[in-house]
Length: 317
Image (cartoon, rainbow, N blue to C red; front, side, top):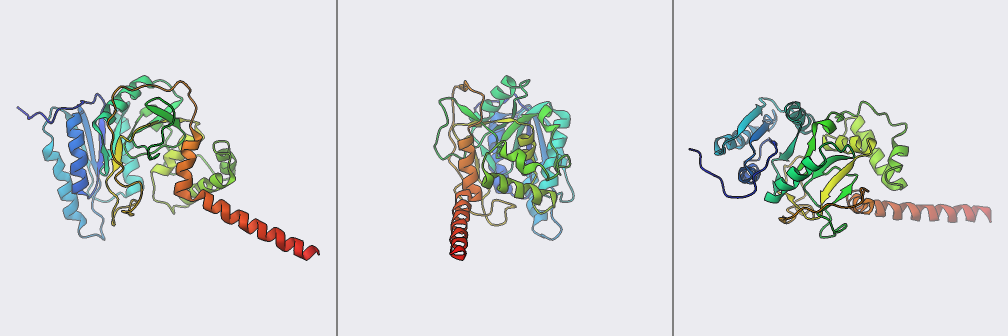
């Protein structure tokens, strides 16, 4: 007889757990999954990088989580011998997951969920299963205490991926290389979402760098797929997933002093729904400004423009 994990909410959803070479964070996230006891657990482990000798042992230790599964569940694994990298490794893992599941929860090895995150996802995956307005359910809240409305969640245009859930119907639109889109109309279309030249410019630059292969990200293409399909994202008004992977050596989250590192988890109870199905654009813009320094760019641009006007006036005297 298998031992029963610590009591807590048990999820109805299938869970995909994407891991690599961080046994410490992987173990912590696994313990949260263990409490939720998914009946179907998918584990994808990327292979060691050739130029990093320590990866072999770290990957081996990380994969030992398989021996810790002690509840009744169907386990499917994809254990890579070679390294696929962040962009192709994670996106192909999610492809594999949604080839077998109509919907489910996705966690990476540095995304530590509260137990109520699983109930949040279960409830909303079912509620919005056939509502094509809704494309993404995220667990992290990056508003640092600011609430948007009185409900348990609000709607956004941004697809945060530190713990999330979605449906096959949405992932079918995912295009990791953005092959469907060229750059000729991107800025104009982005301005339909965020009517601000500086914000549209920031996203257009990211789009162009993705197309040029200069950004190794699977998550930004998900943002663009949501933008260009006019989708709504569910974001909880409390933080249900915290990123515990900020440290030197991480792929992207290398700044240990980041304000996004280790945001406290808050458990939630009853889930209440918003009345209006509209994105809280000011919530999005607060994060975009923080991430892309939009206001600083605006100030520099305006200062340059004032100098230019003064120079032109001096030449006209």
